Length: 122
Picture 1 (cartoon, rainbow, N blue to C red):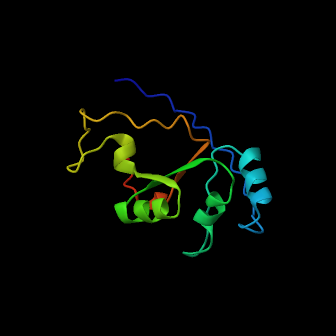
Picture 2 (picture 1 turned 60 degrees about the vertical axis):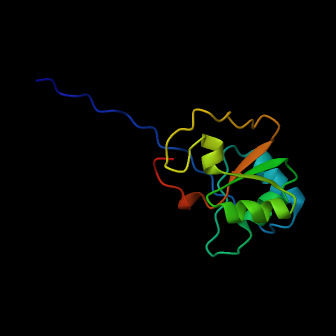
């Protein structure tokens, strides 16, 4: 029998930035440029999370959990796909080996809209 060594987990460094005006393109862009891997959080639905990213000025690909939300973003002129399309997951939850991987190289930012609705395994 062997004792396992304890694993040293590094705690992530979290920097909380409060956005004053989600419609201020300059403020949004500055926050996104000065920070890496940004999570935009609001306390209530409709508080401007998606609007802040729309107004960021970046060429953004929106990843959505549902087709309806994806279609609404496309109607507004934004590029949007579902998480299943991004990950090549078919209707029954398996990897679709016949589909090509989605090319994200043309985008400056990727926004996972409604990220808390995705299952943990994704």
